[in-house]
Image 1 (cartoon, helix red, strand yellow):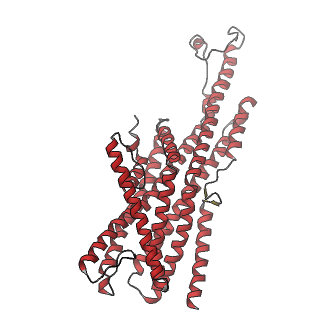
Image 2 (cartoon, one colour):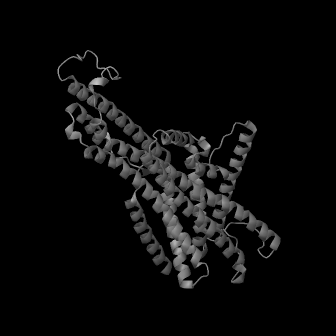
Length: 419
């Protein structure tokens, strides 16, 4: 039985994003919907206000490279996350269409092997989700604590550098601003985590559907070999062959052959239709998320460069913040890796369909059926391209290239600073 769409396991990350105003959430109550829209606008305004305050602070400290790098370690992720939320909201209809189709497909096939596949995919998403959420729950309080107790080794600091004209020695104003930044930081952190998880959830659902299709193709031989007609079954046979002389010699053998071809042909037509539908899903995903991935790459690369430079400087100065800043750099790289890894995994599953078609016993079938295998293989050769901004492929090669390029830029900036 289908669960409610909003209670579907893969939908909960969209719901979490809606809690911080990053996604739409509709109910049957008009007044509730108005409150949700107002809350969403308030959260988005808060995100843009955070960007404005951090950019103002960046302008104020533009002459100090230490403070510039520290500011950009947080301001870039705020800009990056806000941009991704805006891009996703702009593609709401396309993404919801894809979600609804994948939700319906999730319950389309019911057997023991497919249930194992479903459990495997959901378990994988749970593991990744737990890793991201635990990292956020552990890392964020540490970041806040380091900022709050900064007076022990230097001047008082706020968790995130922002242009706030307050006296840090005034406990009341400092604590109020500190609390405000904690709330805004929680919204940004939640949005940053959940935007990644909704991408992973959609990709893994498509991976699941390709795995199911792969298994269905491998069962074509079983469908072809498993059709037999006994003499006593002629009257009860539902697949009556028009204008066929059932009293002809060797009728049992001929009926078996015709039924095999007919059943297998229908089965293969369904597979081809399913393959085209899944290809359409991948195109929808590419259309809905290519700008998202562009923001991900530009923001992630900038964060790695700025945070890497900041960590290097703290290494020379033996700063007390080096531990959580290094952990922050590690999380940024892991986040980008998972985006490239799962998109590569989707393309890999797409390519496996052609391999499955070739691995079946197509050579035992007549030419009329063999042409369907050829159609499957040709369609599988039209490899999808999941891109960032329609010009950068999202795959593991891009991840490695990004690391090499950011390292080069990091060393270049470091050399300029030394000179």
